[in-house]
Structures are given as C-alpha cells and as structure tokens.
Length: 301
Ligand SMILES: Nc1ncnc2c1ncn2[C@@H]1O[C@H](COP(=O)(O)OP(=O)(O)OP(=O)(O)O)[C@@H](O)[C@H]1O
Ligand SMILES: [Mg+2]
Image 1 (cartoon, rainbow, N blue to C red):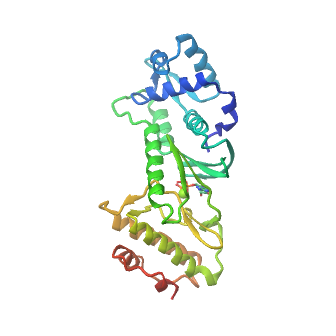
Image 2: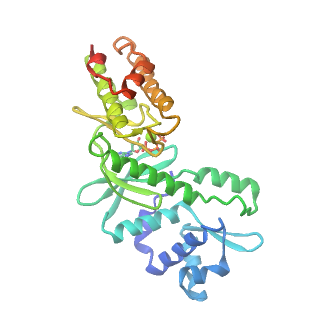
Image 3: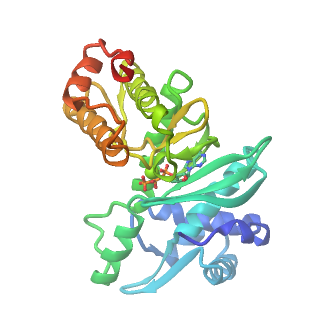
C-alpha cells in the first residue's frame, strides 16, 4: 500500500497545491518536469517554487531527479493529495479513515462524509512505471504515457460503469470521481472468498450473483473481472464491485468475457462447495444471458 497522505493534509498550504498541480500539468508532456518550467506551470515566483519544491519533496509528494536537467515528478502520494484536496474543497468528504482493502492495483480507504464512504485510489500503471524507470534511468519522451493518465482512465471507466449500473444492478453507489480517485458508498457484507456460505444457501447465492450478471448484461455491460474477490454478500443481498475493466456488450469480445466471468464464478463455487454447488455449464448460462432467457430458478432447481 502507498503511504496514506491523510495525515499530512493539514500541513499543506494553498501554494503547495499550486505547486503540485503545476507539476501535474507538466507531466502531461514529460514524466520528469523541468524545474525551469514550474514557475509558469504553477503560477508561483521562482523563489516560492524553490521553497515549495523542498517542502513537497521532504513530504515525499514529489521526487527529484537530475539527468539532462533537474526534473520533478509527482509520487502516488502527491497525486493522492491533489485528489483529496479537491474532494475536501467540494465538501464531498471531510476526513479519511482506516484502510478498507488493498487490491492488486488500488488502495481503498474509509472516508467520512455525511456517512462513512469508501474512497478508491487507482494505481494502474504506477508500479509498472516505477520498474521501467528504475531499469532505464533515462527519460524517453517519445513513448510518454504517464501513469497519471492510466490510473485516471481506470477511475473514469469504473465510475462510468457504476453510474450506468446503479441502482439497477447491486453495485456501490458512486458519489464522485476526481483524477484517479472514486468516492462511493461503502458496501456492507464480506467478500465471497472470506466467508463460508451455509450449504443450504449455496445455490441461492450463486443464482443471485448470476442474476446480477444477467441484469448487468441487459444494462449493456460485462464485468470482465468476476471472481470471489469482487463480490460481497450479506444476509439479504450481493454487491458486485471493482468495475474498471467492464466493457460494453457491443465490444467484440464481450461474449467470450461473459463466459469467462461465469466460469470463474461457477468454478469457484464448485471448488469451495463440491457437495452442494449446482453442476451447470458456464457456456449454457452465458448463452441464456445473451439471449435474455436466463432464469435463476433453473440454478436453484
Ligand atoms: N465500496 C466499498 N466498500 C467497502 N469496501 C470496499 C469498497 N470497494 C472496495 N472495497 C475493499 O477494497 C478491496 C479492493 O477493492 P477492489 O476490488 O475494488 O480493488 P482492486 O485493486 O481492483 O482489486 P483486485 O485485486 O481485484 O484488482 C476490496 O476487496 C474490498 O475489501
Ligand atoms: Mg478486486
């Protein structure tokens, strides 16, 4: 997990955010922003820039590197600080709490608003970028695709899918998106992989999830990352989350992805509940969903 910047937000001043946002703008053109460009990018005097660069570097919100020139880049924490600042200014949130989960490519934290919510920072591209930069140790601008862009695109894709699907499909209610961050409602319940369903309820839960997948398809989407890690259940309902990879049903591979999602799920149920999981064919169910003929009663038997 990337260090939680919430603790240092109160130490930061408006000019620090001007500086960070200047570096952010410079990163549209190169991963390491030339120091000489920072005053005009951030609308600060050169003296102010020197002072703010030191403050922000000390707090690890930016990194410095001298290759052909003295350059600066935002760290994940620096980008997080910018998104948090925006959410706070818009009064979307008024405090950050404990981690809710660490995924392969995200950090999810509890945030305070009028009620507890979840905030997800996307990290797509960030880890890769760090590895590549370590190996190369030079700045190649020809193939410049900033991780800022990759992570922001993932957050936009996830937010748009949630906004399209909520509330027809049981997904976390989306509240707001900024940069690589999403604020959404916290779901109650626990992920499938962390719970044991009583035997008499196994078919029922599987059919509920398949029904959500069918409704998602009717609404024009396929999740594309369906697994026991991305479904939460409580006593009465299931929630499907983690949507950045979703594709529209018009996508050329949507049928194949739908079948793969259903296979992942059914295989998991058959592995974990071999005695009671229904013996159904993912391909058949995928076909039924695509033709609008899926009936969850067939699963419960
Ligand atoms: N809305 C939410 N409410 C409560 N907890 C959440 C919420 N969204 C995410 N989480 C927690 O954060 C974890 C990671 O979230 P998510 O699966 O969306 O991210 P991810 O990085 O894409 O995961 P993956 O490892 O599948 O790629 C979840 O397993 C869950 O514990
Ligand atoms: Mg996940």
